[in-house]
Image 1: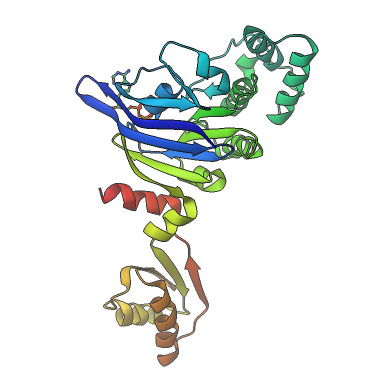
Image 2 (image 1 turned 180 degrees about the horizontal axis):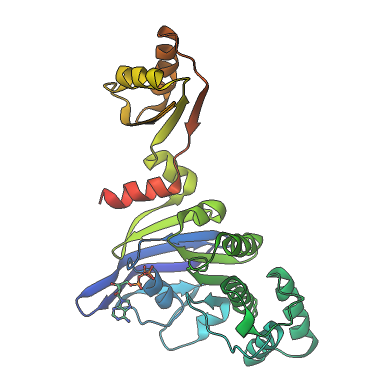
Length: 307
Ligand SMILES: Nc1ncnc2c1ncn2[C@@H]1O[C@H](COP(=O)(O)OP(=O)(O)OP(=O)(O)O)[C@@H](O)[C@H]1O
């Protein structure tokens, strides 16, 4: 079942088309990576999907209910963590979640149990500090807890890891991953390794237009450039191998450094057959031969730069 459906969604700001004819069909329970460079229209899309921006044209359905700008009917299904979340800094995490729950009409033991579970989920269960003493990572984790307080079917996370250090990012990604299958996560970012770690499907947006939508594996298979890393025993051997293969049709790029050669190839099977043969024919000392999968970052750069 699709929990987010957008049809021909467009948003114009005067002459600037921030989102252009975007179609989305997002499956329940998935972690959906919404990728794009700065200014590509990610936040504008999210704001339309959650009813904060009125689309110039197009329709949106959340869990089957049409989103009408200014009406809250479909919003009961969603939670939202903005890119820069705001908190009452004098409160503790518990106080803040209690207030958030009460504003949504929750109370008593039900709310207390929910708060305990959420604090546990985001690793803030024993924290008695006021929010003003929180790190950015702790604030993002509290923001995720707040977005989940009304047991939404979908949470929208707008660049939740962008301002975090590697440890903070890992903590946030681990929490998001734990939600897999339980809540649909719509996760916008420009940090590609984060998407690679946790997302099922990705969409790449560029200048408001959907460029690609697929699984990460399909994306890498279709657009990735494979690389071979070859280690020999001397610089002379690397120079010889570089000269022998530089004109082969399957070589896209060569990057020799001392005893190592990185070869980007267009036809991995041919490269895997021919390079060991050349190494053997010239009696070179092969110390390492590794096939490196393309990273999502390389794929992204290729897709966006080829437009
Ligand atoms: N309220 C607004 N008024 C006018 N233009 C806007 C407004 N909000 C966004 N824009 C423009 O729409 C385009 C898309 O912006 P948006 O913030 O959606 O991109 P983004 O992908 O979220 O970027 P970032 O990663 O930098 O947050 C940009 O050209 C931006 O200047």
